[in-house]
Image (cartoon, rainbow, N blue to C red; front, side):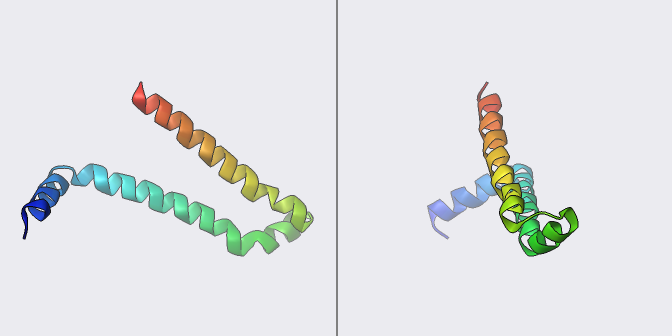
Length: 78
């Protein structure tokens, strides 16, 4: 192992809880976003909407994810 690898592993060992927490948050966000993809046609049928109307679910989800992440970053700084 080189010096760089040793420093990376030492940093990981001291911060593993935060690393696992961040990983699980982004993993769950990914699952939530990916969940709508295969179910879009079922959602359209259950809500009696057109495909164009139901795609706004994706647009609004991504917009509010961006907004929430931005606000979270602002609150994290302060």
